[in-house]
Amino acid sequence: MYLLLALIICIGGGAASGLATPPGEWYAALAKPTWTPPGWLFGPAWTLLYTLMAVAAWTVWRRRQETSVRVPLTLFAVQLALNFAWTPLFFGMHQPGFALAEILVMLVAIIATTVSFARVSASAAWMMVPYCAWVCFATALNWAIWKLN
Image 1 (cartoon, one colour):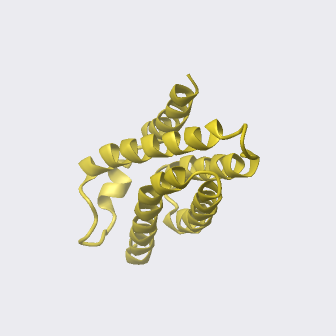
Image 2: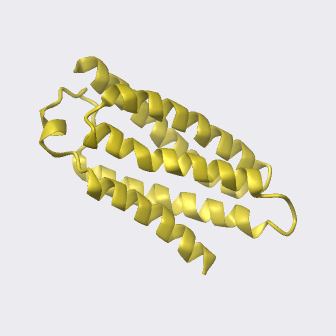
């Protein structure tokens, strides 16, 4: 039941953010680096990442009887809110510079979450690693787009 709730929050929130502010013509017209992934890759990649994030958070939540999970799950909520805010900032408001500042804060929050998760569950922390890696890549892509435009 709680795993399903975590999946709905993560995948549903990410999908809602993306559907509310799709890339559109503005993004298509931007200069992008040659290493920009094809558009079709983002949906499957984020679905996998959100699934791993949800399972990681659920894994930590399940340890609540053994250890305090308040800080790790609060950090998770903060980074998730930052994640959901990036898409409207970049695609909706057409602000790659502000989105770059926001994604840097998000990356710090993701790293803090992962470290905090590791203190509760090694497997939960490892499930966050692909997300952290993807956001590192997304940060570099955001920076390149900002510099090119």
